[in-house]
Amino acid sequence: MKTILAVDDSRSELRLVEAILQQSGFRVVTLENPEAALMFVEKEIPDLMILDVVMPDMSGFDLCRQLRARPSLSKVPIIFCTSKDQDFDRFWAMRQGGNAYVTKPFAPHELIDAVKQCLDKR
Figure (cartoon, rainbow, N blue to C red):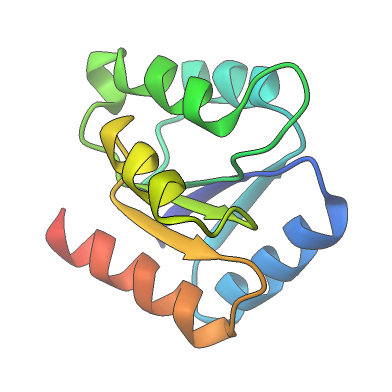
């Protein structure tokens, strides 16, 4: 079973992502802040990560850069899932090391499709 790490400061968003992905057969680990995510990846390497962009203390972009700097995580797909819907935000997310970008609110199939595409490319 593939493990997906989801990081978002909104509990309701995390519950939604968790429910959608669990129904699709994934193990989902949810964390509410980037610092917890950095500690988690010290112990376990997920198969894919989903990051919000706007979080207190550290943005998803900053978290992505820190994750990409670790050799063990350099190839793990990262999907940004955020309410930021401008073309520049999408561009910047890919420049930071993201593999896909899903804009909130999203239909469940949009998230599932992004996850499957990223995992298939891996």
